[in-house]
Length: 544
Image (cartoon, rainbow, N blue to C red; front, top):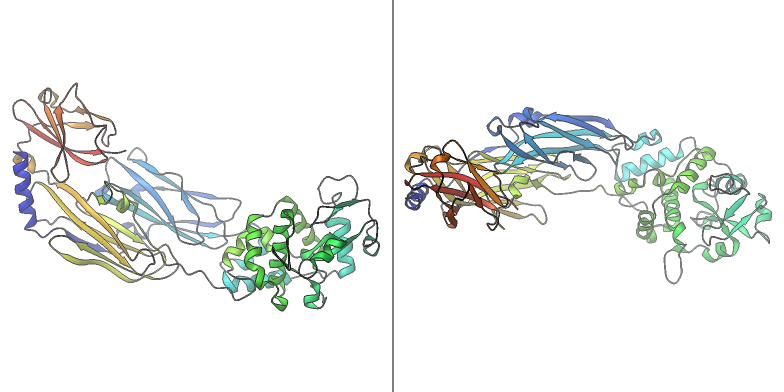
């Protein structure tokens, strides 16, 4: 009886030409819900809470587990959720955290979804602000604007000490292990290139270059390239103590490996790199010296990040000449400057994500759909994108949603459902949602929907007089049958069908339990028939 009814319903269904779709572009009631974190700095992440009742679609409320997904806007937003699952209605609070890395605008979206699709969402907003207010001028800037802001900031109130005073400051205080917190009980200094150290040395730099000390001052950016002019010559951020012979060995060579290049030891690679990048940011790339090695120096700066020695040295230099090396305080500035030596471009990102429920797989390429299912496309890049959504089926191919200029942080929502004229019953269908865009790597995405829908009034048609419940549902290894009609279920036979009507398993119910451990994850119908021929049917979800 069941199989014949299923076939009859399939034939009825085909007369209605597939699915009917309704389109909504950012017009749902919760589209204006924004959680604003305000100004947040890198030392004090902020957590905000929101009650899901304010964002759930009224039609999706009821007992359900909702997956919580946070999608930050690229490339500088850093929101994350502290709740991956909300067990509604017993749990109705979502917590989202903003921990900033960049002092840039923070945007994103938080999506609630389950097997029925998009259930609700809210927008996220905030503003990054560095705790070191010295860099306030860099807020919300990148590329050339950021380079200009840094150049201006580094020059404000700058104290040019002169070469003689700067060297004495370096040897007696800034790089003196007795003074700078590195744990020496006597005056001690170390060559940054070789590691050779001397103790109880004179601070007179004219004496230091002679035996037995043999120490000199290294200009990381060779002073001959800028004619030994001030204030570059005495800028402590690129001056370091070195062995006389090693200083001469380096000469005016660029950093690197191989013939004609100088490679410092690992302990100095990051420091030399940040000194070079600082120098060109503060002044300019004299004779194009940085251009040929900038890529390598950036990699050194990343591989050998600032440590406590760098932080202390930067602070001590600030006390002497009243400016700082930004790439020690905030190495991430380099992520917002594509080039120090040439014109820096602003990142342009074309990308989008689909709501997580659209990616939830039942098999390798299918999803389940239900009535009034909504899904979302979110532009999480920086550029406008073009997206079109199509429905393909055996009966039609049509465009159901589009936006030729979906802006950054923009949303496109599309809804699909069964037509209202459909006869009662359990319906099976397969449709393909195709998303076409101008985003590289996502020019065409396909999602095959294969599912069922039970209108409720079909119970009489199926002679369903046995009412029961399935626990747990979703299930993993076994299910228990319960409900008010248990006396009519005992000694019953069961059959499990997939969404196409194919029999997957059958047997006899033993102790109100059915073993489903060998059935693949997916959506099924559990059909129970007792000795009187009475039938009951319920949806069964199996997860792995």
